[in-house]
Length: 123
Image 1: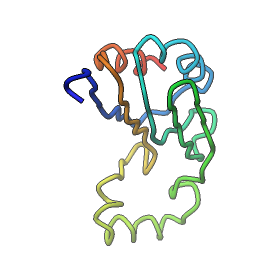
Image 2: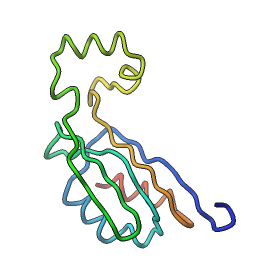
Image 3: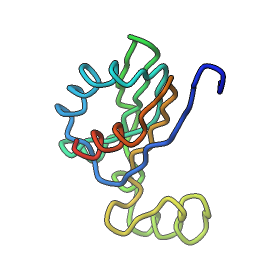
Image 4: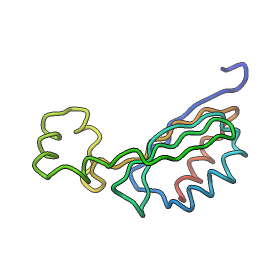
């Protein structure tokens, strides 16, 4: 990987994306960053209860609604139980965003991580 300047990083945040801005970024910006592969979960401010899976490999891109966040389907009692008894669930919990998060892994050649993060932060 080092021989070909292949690197990777994880983009992580809690606030949802604007769907139109994210789709625009996918269509226009991802090529210029030499992204070879990307995959992860995200959600959109217009549909905060839905988890989307984002995948790209070269020119092939998919964005598919997967399921609902636990915070959108479980009762407060069930959520409290999970936070108290499931270490992984508690680790990913946020008082403001609950279990909602964006986590995208990028693999590419000569990735400019700082530029990609800056662009995604504006979405």
